[in-house]
Image (cartoon, rainbow, N blue to C red; front, side, top):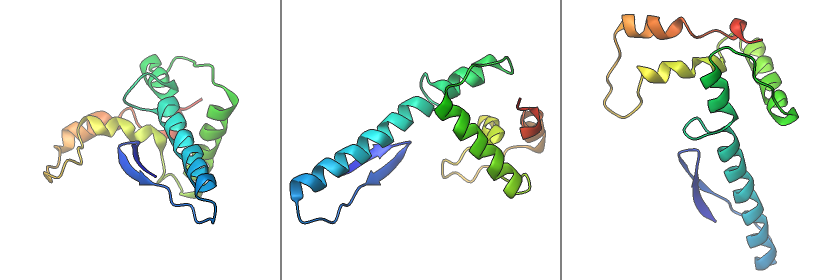
Amino acid sequence: SEFTAMGSPCAVFVDCYDEELGARIAGVVRAEAERVEARYSRYRPSVVTTINQRAGEPVELDAETCDLIDYAATCHHLSEGRFDITSGVLRRVWRFDGTGTVPAQAEIDQCLQHVGWRRVR
């Protein structure tokens, strides 16, 4: 089963003797990828866009989102700060569109004012 999710091509391959069962399993995997994309998309209404739109104001989160935030905190700690989910604001100036264009340091510095896991409460 091939599909697109999170801006990327995806494929699910199930190795089993029952073709119908394999197709159902692939469908479950695809549905879960689509659910996660819809729930956490940066590009359409989601919990992520709500957090970003609140710009630092409190947001009540469900258990699944809290678990993801806790996992992000663990990754931040284990990577000694190299993994930081607050760095998404850099997309405003840093584009990975194949042009190789590097933003000016002043543009980067302006965005970096909004980056920092230490700001998350």
